[in-house]
Length: 32
Image (cartoon, rainbow, N blue to C red; front, top):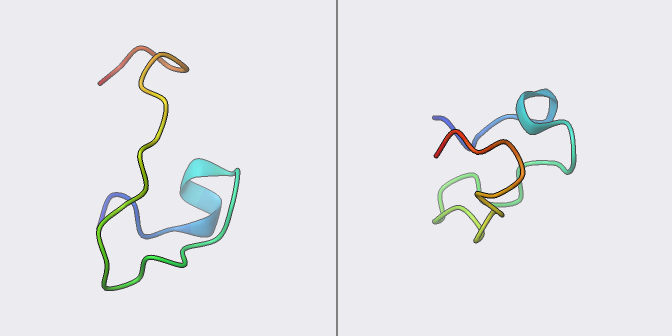
């Protein structure tokens, strides 16, 4: 539900609807 949103990340769509989220760079925002 966190990685399911095209406007959420604002970088790409949600091709991983029912799949595991891609390895997103955690050094971008520094939150995770």
